[in-house]
Image 1 (cartoon, rainbow, N blue to C red):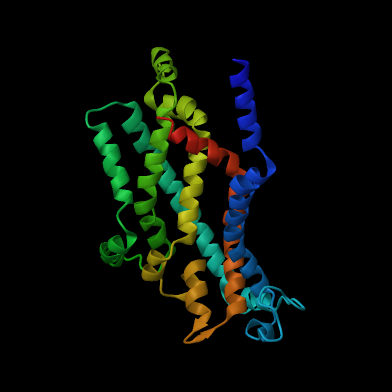
Image 2 (cartoon, one colour):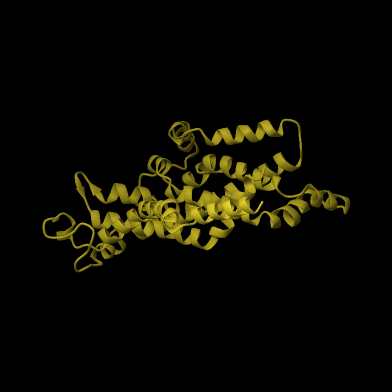
Length: 292
């Protein structure tokens, strides 16, 4: 017994030795962090590089800046309609996220808590709808948008984005609602609470992490969406950031790299800030969603 204990301790110490820890933990983590952060670093240095350093690699290093400038930022904010693109993106993302969360909460609660026949099949079909590529859906959706008369307006994006947001948000909330004990709901029913009261006063307060996770997911997809925004919006003042940066700052074979990287950098900051504030809720909701 003592020999086995000594062998276990020796094995643990060998696993936690410094060379092995560097090889199994720190080296993969360093590679992951480098791959993850290098694009943001490249955007940041390109956004503040003077024009003469962007292509002159013989005299300047491509990985560093000599004499940073804010001219690209100034051009982007005051000589283009980028602030309007940002405002359009905020409105579209917030509105489509709110609509998607409302519909997903109702759908997920009905599928997971009402226990009707065929609920599992319904949940599976909803998730399969998420797997349909948007490049296939935008063709029939474009016809509907033209017929309704909302082409080239923010309303076109607000009403079409939920077509790919609701399926995944519903699937995610289904997993989180499944982790909430049924006894709480049964006790509320015994006390005379209605289904709506149970949803709003019992289930939703316990599902706040799941709601935040679904909201972050929906907001991120809405913020970065490109195909629908490119198809349904034509005027410059109604474009969103992903489409506006690409279509307005690239003129033929001329790429305004400083302004492009400045727009990409500023456009990614809201999502980064959102994740930094709610990362704990996001992780807890994902663990709750895969519990069963």
